Image (cartoon, rainbow, N blue to C red):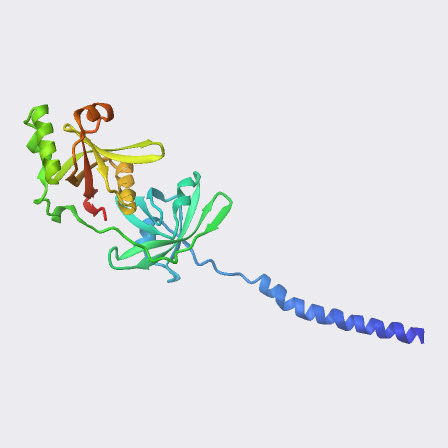
Length: 269
């Protein structure tokens, strides 16, 4: 009787073990199945315009040059090529280390026709996924050669032959009239109390740029990272008093309308 009971238990245990093995084998097979990686190693040029072997248009770029970073728009550079990178929040890219990778997929639009969307980035041993639920917003831009600057006054030419006193008088006049002017010079940036301010400097003085939006600032960062020189198309504001000019070093504030980046004119708006 005892022998019969032990045999029954042994048989039951063997059946349960066989069932477990039968279920575990296909699961183990699934775990070992090789999943093809959809992201191809590519340069920036290949990611934007190169042919994709798997036609998924997903690429992983190693240490691409990030020229400028905004909240949801960044500019990637490769030689003379500048391309757009988008995501809901790109601010973390400003903290990347010396070695990183960006995993992106190619997207199509109107202007620009092709841009890149960030899926995740690898910084050292850490992989961070990002979202891109919000549609990207791109700045308005056009070729510099086709930009009509005729409605803007060449302020450098107009004031260069005047004395300092007459120049200040003319600046004040243009300020009261809200004149449209253009200035060429060196772009500089200053920070005070956490407030970042941009200036354009030339032989006339130092002009503070006002009314800069997020997209415009992204490209201004790119100007600083590129050559540091630009042409701005601005609206004159009221002139500082002479005492304020001596203290701040600013000749006059101007509201930024458009500015040049490489061979393009970027609209600040």
